[in-house]
Structures are given as C-alpha cells and as structure tokens.
Image (cartoon, rainbow, N blue to C red; front, side, top):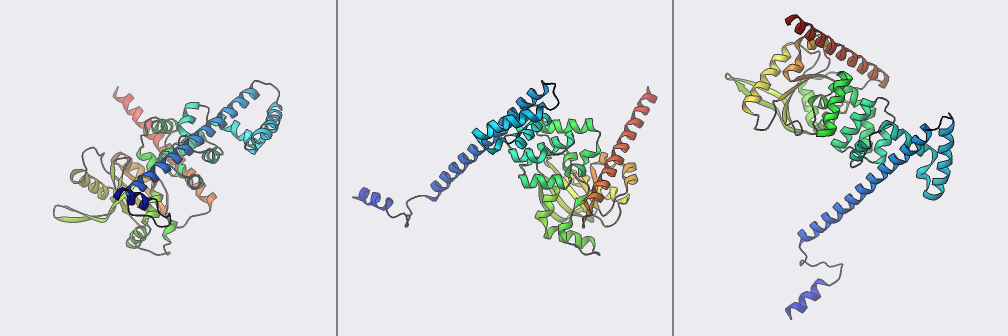
Length: 369
C-alpha cells in the first residue's frame, strides 16, 4: 500500500511538484543537459570554422595554379552561384573571398584546428581585417586564452590593446617567440599582461582630484578596473600595511594574477613619474617576496600608475630589470587618431631603446673578449 501511494504522489499534477524529487538530482540533470548542449555547439562551431578554412584554401590553391589575373573573381562568382543554390547564402561571393583570405592569413591548419575550439567564425571575421600578422596572432591567442566574446574582441581591437602592451615595444622576433610560447604552452608573460596607457575614463573623475580620489574611484568601479587590467587579476586589498623597522608603509592596491602566479603591487601617482618611486616600489616588492610569497609562486611584480611618464628616466633606471612596470593612465580619452599616433611614437621609442641597450651589451662583450 505504501508503494502504491508513493507511485501516485510522484505522478501527480505537473503544476504541483512534490518534495520527493531531490533538488540535487534536478541540478545534476540540468548540468548534464547544458554541458552536452555546449559541447555540441562547440563541435559544430569548430567543424564550420575548419570547413570554411578548407573551402578557402581549396579555392585559393585553384586560383594560384591559374595564371590568368581575372581568374580569381570569375571562379569565386561561379562557385558561389553553385553553392548558394545548394547550401544557402553562407557561401556568397563575399563570404568565399573572406574564406580565401582566412586561409591566406592563417595558413597552418593545426593552428586553425586549435583556435577553432574556442573561436567562432565571427571571431575570425573580426581578426581578419587586422593588417599586421603579429597583431593578428596576438588577438587570436589572447581571445582563445581568455575566452573573449566577439563583442569583447572587437572592443580590444578598437581599443588598440596590442599597441598598449609591453609586448608591442619589443622587436618583432622576440614578440613572435612570446606569442609562440603562449600558443604552444599557454605560457603568459608579464609583457602580455601589462599595458600602457590604461583607459580609466569610466572613473568619471573631475578635472582636479587627489591620489585618494583616484583610489576611491577605482574601488568604486573595481569590476571595470579589473576588466581594464585584464583577465587573471584578483583583488587582494587596498592600503595594505607593511611594517619595516617599526615604520608603517602602505601599498595602494594589491592584486594577485592567477596565470602569472604573482602578487602585483600597484602604486597610484599624480603627475609625472619620479625616480624616487622606484626605491619605494622595490621596498614593497622585497617585503612581499619575504613575507607574503607562497611556495610555487613567482616573485611579486610592481606597477606604478602615473598621469604621465618620463621615458628617459625609465630607460636609465632600467625598471623592467627590477620587475617594475611604469604606465600612464588616461581619465579622458583623446581622439582616436591622436591616441594612435602617441602609441606608435611610444612603440618606436621603446624599440629603439631596446636596440641601443642590446648594442651596448654586445659592445661590452666584445671589449671583454
């Protein structure tokens, strides 16, 4: 009789669920369904991306094997008419030309296979117009690693993220090696993490503000600030007190970067960078290394955020060798053309500085020999 009652109660009205179905069971079933749907969508997406690459590569090979200059346009139009009639507008002439460009800019099929596990066709469509190969590789790999949406990817490109990374200041060969490590080993370097300048326009600061105002505004908009810092940063604390020889010092902001496995101390400064800031940050970093660094972590890094930089001082102090990154911040964004020009000038200046340093090092080695 008890079994009969149980059967009736579990098959009652759908509008009146009973307590006999454990909530954990429903949760697990939902998880299985969502996981399977996500997996199916990812598989379909990957298959479509690889199909478009193969179509583009096949047509491109056909075009390259023909010596007639106008053959490419003719074959795209003809093939498109045939495929659209059978498979729809996804194979229009414009899309076929984009697939050919895709195959041209991403010639390595294995790289495409790996990227397609995370990037949709819409992601690739956003990356294809980027002219420089190093930039394309950077955006594609960072998108894969940080799982950006298409909207986020477009925002990163439009915000000139590559030009704002320390990586862009390096010679192309060294930058390519770092991206290769990111691709092959998921190894993220500080040069891929730190930026200059940082866009803090979302803080909506007035024309006159103090360092305390800046810090308070950042904490108020902490989520936006972390998004600008980049994926992987976790907030640890503000005004973190450290005591050295009985004297208290305070780190403005302390973060932990999960992928770098490092503490990151941030010092906020108004005005132009001063040489004295280096000693202060080095003191913070050595204290953190001695008292806070855990087993398996790398040595802490420091970032000094200033309203403006002094390139010559930074070059002479060789802050990068001390694990200190100096960056400027913008509370109001200038016109895009002005910003682009400033970034390109900064990149050229930094690359020239590195070349001069390498030349000096080589000359010294030759002198020693």
